[in-house]
Length: 421
Image (cartoon, rainbow, N blue to C red; front, top):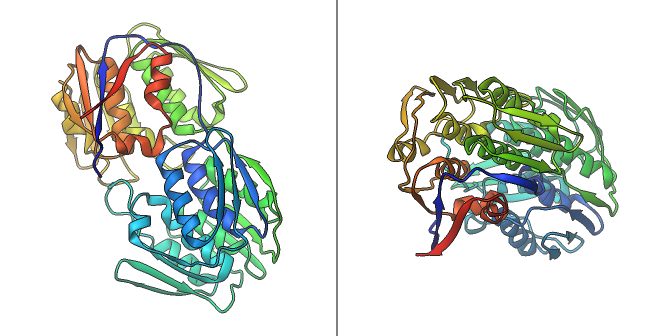
């Protein structure tokens, strides 16, 4: 992946003002493949205009679906002529969530050939639990040559017991089971907000799913689904990134169009640091309040602290007073941003999967390179805090998951721009 531009940030400007968050990236990449399960055109609103969405459009069109996409407004997916079932690596390499096409295609036509996903390299992310779930519904699986081949004469509901909580596995089995014969029960299901949103989308087209948001999800398969219009929830991780950026610059920012209850784990840590956070029905205000203190953070499945906010939070803690620890329990290689933060003056060391951060009084602008999506967010946060100019390379990773992030930050007073290399 190579980006032909770089991001330039001159730090030291407190963010101030009001901003509206985009639709959820993690919801979008599940809902768009799920549209293949509809027997009629369906319309999805509030999708973020990001690279992952554009990659999924290309994949669905390759499979035969007809897409009408107006960025910022709606996407209509007409899957009635989507007869394809083969998705090669040249298409899946652009995003990790391409594996949701397995569940959608198995549910739609009982046949899927999907290459292993690409996206950010965050270490080992096996899909054995996904495949176990498909087999529990009657699919035959052949995993070879970087492809997953799945086929079933028919899908029959059954009990799926996950050995560990898996967001991707929960979503994939929900997709496949939605049109299986009979009842499926998923035990040890993930509870993330985008799983609830996916269930609501599927139910709006006629699926029968109960229990999403708990650790037991019950699905009664249906034969027919119908047209629907659905609006996806706001982006939990963009909301958190903006909250962290406001705290990092000691700014005063109000974020509109968000869901405060989704942010409780981050809000608790910011309050513990000494940041003022106030909530209304659909907005959060972040503003300074004295010295920011060191805290200890441990990533967990929802409703714990999100792994997707670990890297931006690590950047924030680089200038907190004292020694902080950040323990990553979800992904084993989500630490590639640490070398880049050290280039900016951060005092950080990694012990196993725990980051030890000795807060410094200043960070300094430096040329840095993005290695994955949320590492990009971390380097933006660090650049906003730092003295001087930070040059951020490989911005393509950032564009995968943040909709025009530099424009939003400029509206809040950041000195940030892009420049062709």
